[in-house]
Length: 530
Image 1 (cartoon, one colour):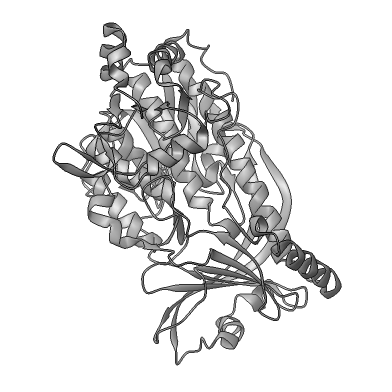
Image 2 (cartoon, rainbow, N blue to C red; image 1 turned 135 degrees about the horizontal axis):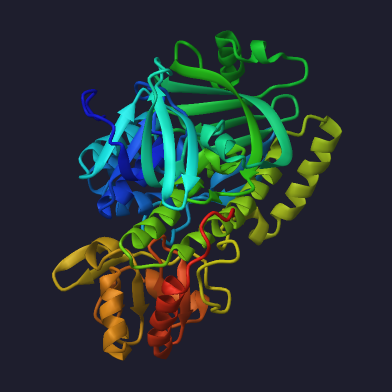
């Protein structure tokens, strides 16, 4: 945390409102790109108790890009084992379906991982404090904003002294201030709603004895009491229980209720220490606009989803990466401001698909009518005889449209791979050994050899790297499998790991030409809403 005596600059390149994981990560990524960034957070200190507890491989790759994983990989406990990792069971405990959270991922990290959010926030805040140009100011609240052609003027004040307001001028503003975002309200952005809403008790505990679970996460689709059991990071577990109509929110939130509902699984005051219990209303919502002029939304300020797929924070981390590489390139004069236009459409299209799947899972889990639950169970058991349904993959959406990609037979906008490689005398994950950022990779030759010298120089200037997989050894066959699956020989991936273009090896030079054109075309008129 920035020392209390550190003054808040009156002018920065980017002001981030919200000091949670998404805001802190955004600041770190922008600071590493050379921007002056200030983070303001209304709370005077970090919240010490659990909240988000599941993070996926793609989000860990973003944290790797921010330099966090080298020293903090032990914060995350992977879902391992032969079974799918995520189970749906009925009230009798019978397995209805498994989702393959234990499959090999595209990103070099375990597909699904448990973690303790306060530990992640502490690591991110320490990283922010160590990043030149980044300051974090706790106990400072957002009040208002105004925009003109030069950027955003933001009024902030000490949380405990709202009359002592100051104005900060920034080229850009990121609102990462949570579900009840004041930035979103100040921008006048409306919110879409899935129509799903359910109150759930979330109970976090530390086991005093060794526990044995058949899966990383289990949904108990019991109409008598829908429940979730999930790994929530090293040494921690979580239960979630839906509120039934015969119980008030106040009753659900009582500590005695948490103990009573966990007791059937042997979780009692003698076997566990209750760390936190709180009632949440699970919803599926999204902001209609993620950009208004030079102000942007990210994280829970832009979207909410039921936690049934563990994708809430993962989506916010994707937001941070997708937005910050664009801002960094525009700041350095390497891209036209128009590249910012695709941030909102790409992200909302992606996140809407995840919200829809999470809501669909919620409707299965939250069924309270015994007769309808019996029909559901019979249908899921019937479908479970189909191997393709019995253990299915997690949601894997493409970017929304319009996107900053080139049509490539449906591969564009999907996740590019990262595997372990060996190059010269170095062995490790590709982004660490060869380089992150823009990646031009071919399985059949050197893609750099075909580039026009001017395009090659430009590609290096934007931080692009090239790799010939006949020289950079694909140690576990990750790239070989990916190329076969997608029927191509080469790809150009963006800094947020989305495929910009893919095709034949001979197409590599064209990919770079198309990228240069996409990044540098005529900018839009400032002030439009997207």
